[in-house]
Image (cartoon, rainbow, N blue to C red; front, top):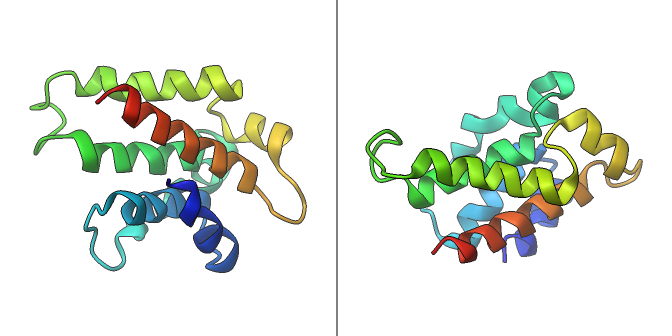
Length: 132
């Protein structure tokens, strides 16, 4: 579902991985984010600019918060565990959540990190179904 919007944002729109994931999730799940909301996660692209935590994972977590946090994360019972569960799912499926490791494994010259962003999009869709 989210993957249906990824290429439009990532390749055609030239958004970074975090921005792409949040915008694609906004379209797929009708989050109702305002114009420019992608800027909230823009600094997470390229692993926060230093190839650490994957920006697509960060964008996915932002979308998870929009979908599942009730007001505040601390006021949402089980939200910490829900977030950790998604991170653990990605790590199990992709071998890491670190940008540098994922780039080494999945990055291609012509499409950059598209494969990683698609994997994270699929993981988020599956996780949302699993945790309904």
